Image 1 (cartoon, rainbow, N blue to C red):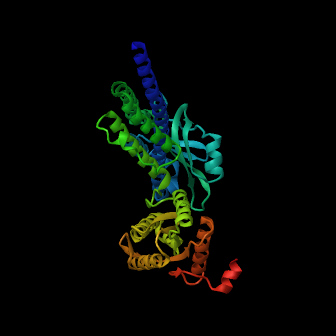
Image 2 (spheres, rainbow, N blue to C red):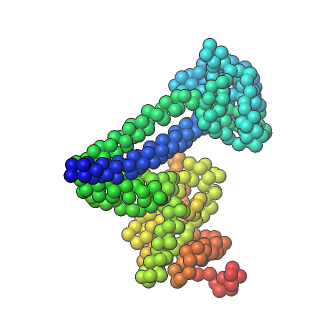
Image 3 (cartoon, rainbow, N blue to C red):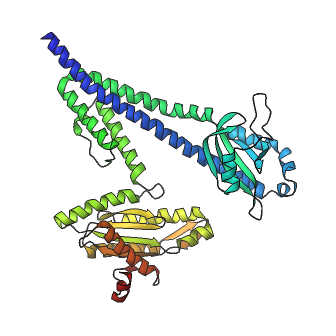
Length: 423
């Protein structure tokens, strides 16, 4: 009997700890990978900003324009100061040759006169494109590096601006940022395993629920609900459940939401529309789609810059989100296009869009002391059978008609003769 009890305990322990170890490993890999990608994005963004700042400083410095590299020799302290304050090394290239740099070797000698890698030269100088690498060799040291073309007044590439951080320092920061999360995930798994041995089958069921929840997340189901048997527990497994729910929400935001506006992205919108299509077919539920486009949006970017355009996109997204509250949802379909999905009858949907249009007309983008007005054009279509793609196309055809017939309107139908031509 004692041996049998031991065997049951061993089986329960094995059944509980094994999936937890696997799941913890998966989460560790994910945390490490996502942490690395986030670090790459942050470092790239930071170094891009430094490159732009250096480029603008050079472009607007009359002495640089007239004296070129004599300017650098008299301003080494300026660039060294940037490196000391940010930890980012700076190099100015003449074509592919380093003419001034804050990168030094072990004895303090600057890497002046050395050449950039051929891949960098082909991309930046040959194709006039910016280049980022997480493992670029600079004077024998691996760097995270960002290169930007340096152009003259005629637009010809005369060299490059480089900003970089040593790979060793970046990886040290990455380790420090994810080590706690990795250790916590493994400690939680071990604690849950020990608790399962003490409280028998109920604990096992809780852990199996946790495993199933995380498995669904790993398969891409970000809408699945966490079982209360492990989320509501007042112990380590409950803590693991809360962490898993937060992980699910973070993953959902990552893959389902547009980073600029916070609305659903195209992928998530497609999934939700497929669900609504099924509901419309099986339960005769209402399903209305409206696709809207900001009129002359390129004008905002061209005349006031992308920062102004981004403000417009975020403000319009808030107006749309408030306009569909409790009756549908909004998504950023692409660029300045937005998709509104309604789960209400057609008349109620058109009334909501009318209110949205009023709010858009009242809206003013306040940017750098200016007040800019915005208009939108919408095409709307009611689901009457068929596919989601066909429904969206019907709305998009009406949007296209509206864009070619005055804009700032909600198009509910296309004249028959024009519709025949479209078909």
